[in-house]
Amino acid sequence: MLSLRNFWRRHRSKILITAGVLGSGYFLYRLYNAHEQRLADMERELARQRANDELIKAQLQAHFENVQLIADTTLPHAMQYLRSRIAEELDLSQLTERLQKGKGKPYTLTSSEKLELWDRLKILSFTQMVVSLWAVTILSLYIKVQVNILGRHLYIDTARGLGSSLLLENVDLIDRDDQQNFLASADFLANNGLLALISNIQAVVTEVIEEKKLIDLFNTTSFYETVMQILDKFMSLGSLHQWIDYLMPEDSGHYKLGTSSSIDDTVLPNSTNFDQLMVEARTVLSSAEFGKIMGISLKVAVDALVEDMEAQCQSTGASLTSGMPLAKLLSRVMQIVPSLLREASQNQFIKIIRTVPEVELFFTLLYANNLVD
Image 1 (cartoon, rainbow, N blue to C red):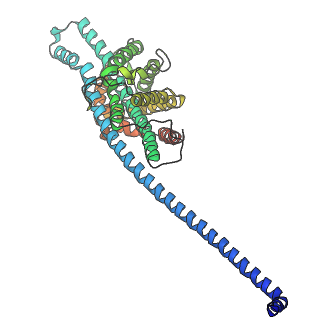
Image 2 (image 1 turned 180 degrees about the vertical axis):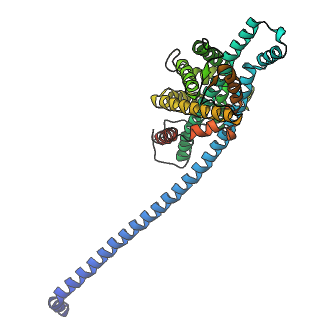
Image 3 (image 1 turned 120 degrees about the vertical axis):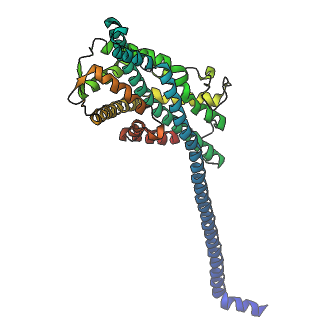
């Protein structure tokens, strides 16, 4: 016992130092081990997040391709049906046939009858052209809006399904039937809005060109100004956003899909999701930003129309630039309509509108804003 005490007295400082070193070493080891564990946990979490991000990207790409596939069939279908409806409601063949017969047999028509037929042809040919131009421009923009809205909901669907921390609790998921019904509503213009559209544009056309005589000269400038005057007057009719009622139903709950649609021709059920999509679409169309884009697009379409008319005239040795009588211009007006209503993949007017920088920027910002709303 005495020797142990003596040993302690002689080596106490060494023992304490050694114990302190060992204790500090153990503490540092534990601290280092905990730090390493935290680093490993962080690396695993980062790896999990990276994998989750890649999964989200893959899911989003799959969802986008799914929507794009539906959208790619929507515009051609809508264009085909619109073309058939315009041809049905604005059939000028009887007028032209009667005028051709009167030309070959001078005594079959009186002068007043010829004049009346020419006046009707003048009004209806411009009506057909402007209706086609307006409908193609606005319909192509509207379907683009639809795709952007669906893109937002598919983003939400993917984020929620992967447990994203984004605040998405208040947004309903949109099932495939609602997506298809929403895109099928693009046929509303041809099914429900076309007759009113034709009637109102015809009234404006009559007001603008009724007093113009068949011998009056038209050149590229006067033709452009006439078409723009018709469009401006038409867009100023009624309330600020009255034109939307040609494009989509005011009450989506009572909207009936047309027979041209791939969806069954039945009254839609009270679908909150479908109603939500329609409300969002109307909100975009009613915005000041979309109004600007629509105005720009219509002007671009009219520019393309004038260029196409001039090219058509030059191909036959004529020239709209130097001017031609209205009577000769009417045949060019009727001939230009098929190119306006051409299949979507071959329609230069749709391609030109969609590549306008302001239009591209609008839809880029719309999609980006949708993701953060």
